[in-house]
Length: 445
Ligand code: ADP
Image (tube, rainbow, N blue to C red):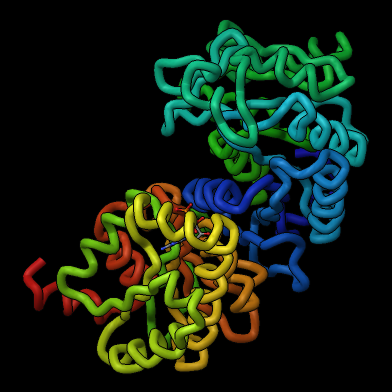
């Protein structure tokens, strides 16, 4: 580990992360917890300093905003993380390297290196669990090259070149190099030697090949002394081990990393996502449990939808969690969008669910399961949540969380396509609602 804090083994936090979107931040935080670091995710820069934490992940929304803005927000996040005492930094972007020739991965990395007075970092989006591997500088999504994977048609960040050395070189004036698989396969010492040699040649950023998690652990170990590491959440697998080897993170503490405070109160589920997975989860819930459907057109007509939903919730809350949902088939969403306009339809539903969340809070709800990326953002904002402690994984990519603040909330925030069909029930149980267990037993499921 690099710096003068080394004599103080209790100083926290250790790792400061900047993520370019919200669900990516959660994914990374989930990974760090699994590897033994107590982790807090903040929504932008938090107003309170998180305590008893090994890693902080600042979630920005900087993936596709103008370069200057992305650089400014990332530098502000870095400065705040430095103030918190972090000793190593990680810039997290998507495992499909989502960016355009204009940025923002290269420019943000450059700015972070400058701010840290550092001359070199790696760039490794590899995430084998989700089929992202890199060989000879080329990114594969399962069996296809990135530019043949569907990502070439992405509406905001079309990826038309799988050669990431070339892609990154377009985004930075610094020299981009490659640490190829023949080196990575030889392990930690070979990777470290290649890093030293690339630095001597004036390379500022190196794309790193990797095929399996074992490669990511080796790369992580070889990066122990780099002030800045960049990549997808996969590469973060190898970073906690460095702190353990340096005596800064204990293995016993490791098992406790996902512990969350107990949060009492009523519970509810809110769904504003139109994805297939959420549709299946709503259908599954509706078989035996109470639910209230929000009609976007009724909201648009000015009917008292919020009051009706809250009256419905109040009838059920003391017995079991109700579901309040706008989720419907993509055909119906399209119809509503044709009538109201895409943006207006989205905003109406998001605002309605946010108002309902506030009303539920007033009724004593402290455990919320929320489906939908944008929906989660709107609800979390309405509930004034600015920081989340990350707990155990409920389903891949979705951990239980607890908000940090005056009135802590237990939250499960799920982006659209995540989670098994019984996700809502599993999430409620993980958030501490044990009534859902007895009701499962009663219905014989
Ligand atoms: P996902 O993570 O599945 O993309 P989001 O919450 O990010 O879910 O986005 C879903 C968008 O669809 C939101 O803007 C939401 O307000 C909108 N929406 C949800 N239900 C409906 C509906 N019934 N009619 C129109 N728009 C809807």
